[in-house]
Image (tube, rainbow, N blue to C red; front, side, top):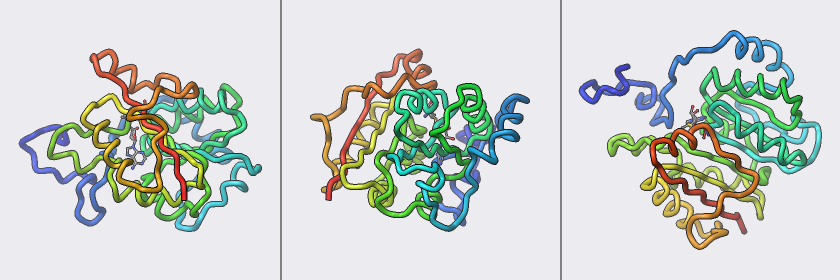
Length: 238
Ligand SMILES: C[S@@+](CC[C@H](N)C(=O)[O-])C[C@H]1O[C@@H](n2cnc3c(N)ncnc32)[C@H](O)[C@@H]1O
């Protein structure tokens, strides 16, 4: 894999000058037959195609309940569990990773959950083009890629310009919940969120993990490696 080779020039799509710096590098990843079958069977009802027009979330979920955006759900196991724990909320879950999309659709099918819709696209473009202002009650970004090498830090999702785009999508009183297992990224997250006057920290610094968030797959991996875990929960106000 050239993307991990320090000696190779980086020409992955994460840094293509035309497309700007991206927070992910598309990996092929193995799609199992069951994941592909779930995509074929479930996409028409639970998948959302990328478009450049605004999406009406109440129409999408067929009800006016609170809406939560999740960016980077990975294999979707935590997403599924949260949707079951909070059945009165609706979850728009976005990732670029095909096998994860298949896996989440498979879980939705198995558990007969009706309050998740799935997108396979760069969430930055979805936020730019598909979400109206003042429509979200919550935003979940759990264990975004830490991009821990100094020269990769610029690919991190949680930076001032992206959060500045996200915040208008939140209703007043809506929350943003981040988590990471990479301490230096946790410090960056705290600095970024603290820099917004219309965001209020619900804790002194890092928040206790809210009861609705189970351990994620990436978090379990981090713990096995001896990493800590930091949650941040900030509320949006006018
Ligand atoms: C480190 S994984 C964490 C996955 C999951 N939240 C967990 O905790 O197990 C980060 C995920 O974010 C996704 N991702 C990164 N940048 C993204 C973007 N701009 N839009 C959508 N998904 C993105 C990656 O594909 C990956 O699945």
